[in-house]
Length: 171
Ligand code: 5GP
Image (cartoon, rainbow, N blue to C red; front, side, top):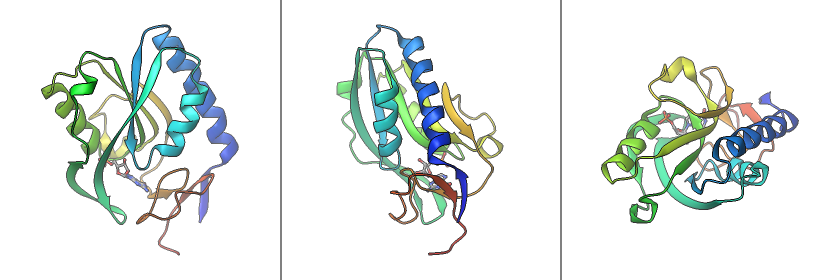
C-alpha cells in the first residue's frame, strides 16, 4: 500500500485544525458530533487538540459505503436528534467523497430543527464533490483514490493503521 499521509503529517495538521476550531468557537458552547465509525480516531485526536473549553461530544452512526464504493443511500442508526436542538453543532467526519452523506445529513438535521451546523472533515475529495458542500475545517484535499487507515476501513479492516494509505485491492 502506498502511504498518502504519514502519522506525523496528520498529527501536525490535526494540531492546526484544533487551533482553528478553538479560535472560531472561543467560549461559545458547542457539540462535537462524531460520525461513526470512520471518524473515531480523528475525533479522539481533534478533541484533544481543541483548547476551547465549552464543548461536549456526541456520536451518530451513518453509513453509505459497502466495500470500496458508495451505495448512494445513506442510513442513520441513531435518529434521536432531539438532544441536538438549539445547540451549535460541529460535525466531525473522516472524509467527504461525493458529499452525499453530509448533504443528506445536514438536510436531515435542518428538517429536525438543528440549524447551526459546521463541518470538520479530515479529508475531502474536492474533485469528486465539486463544492456540493461547504467544509468549514478541512485537513487535506486528496485525489480521487480509495484510502484506508487512521479510522478509515475497507470492509471493517485496516482502521488501525496510524497513517493513511491508498488501497488498491491487496489484502
Ligand atoms: P460520501 O457520501 O461523501 O460519498 O462518502 C462519505 C463516506 O464514505 C465517508 O464517511 C466514508 O465512510 C466513506 N468513504 C468515502 N471515500 C472513502 C475512502 O476513500 N476510503 C474509505 N475507507 N471510506 C470512504
